[in-house]
Image 1 (tube, rainbow, N blue to C red):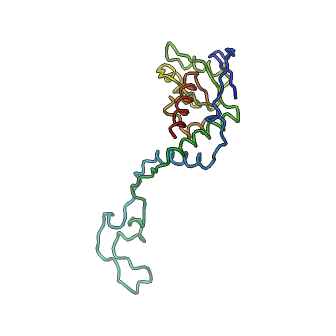
Image 2: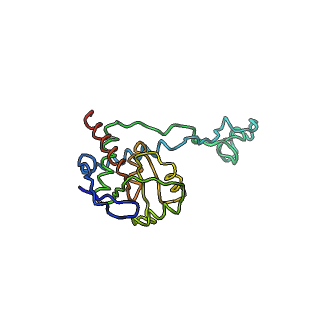
Image 3: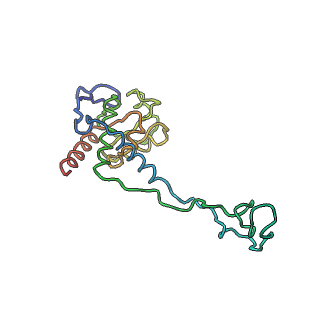
Length: 214
């Protein structure tokens, strides 16, 4: 599959890049994508939730009623879970939600996500660009030129461009990431993927290398 390379004015440069079939043309594996997205979201959870159980609630331990004959539950003290202000039964405790996935499965998931974007023609390739100063107005002009204004887009940059990042960080629908940060969740969460030429070449080389090692 070939994609035309555009400049930041939205004009066709006359060059085309071929999307590697082993990366952008495989049969997507939905379950691999599900697991990779689930892992990413689970790893974002802090797991610091906590509620006090009966032994942790501050209160008198005096027996507040007779054992039998009261017509209700046997409440040993004010910390009983059946009373307002008492401890919680089996409440949440701090835990780690993260889990591991096989490296090959995560690679399959990312290729599957990229293949879905290629199938739906939601991949744009821009020639490499820089910005002299951080100006959101200039970045919005680029979005308008390539007809992505208001669309949820993910820009994948091949090099670290501080001014480009600063120009786009206030735009709600736009995210920027280097190649190292391109995971399955971010690909699926974006409406359109925008690669710079360098980023696309680097990604292709990286995944080709991983495929040979596998």
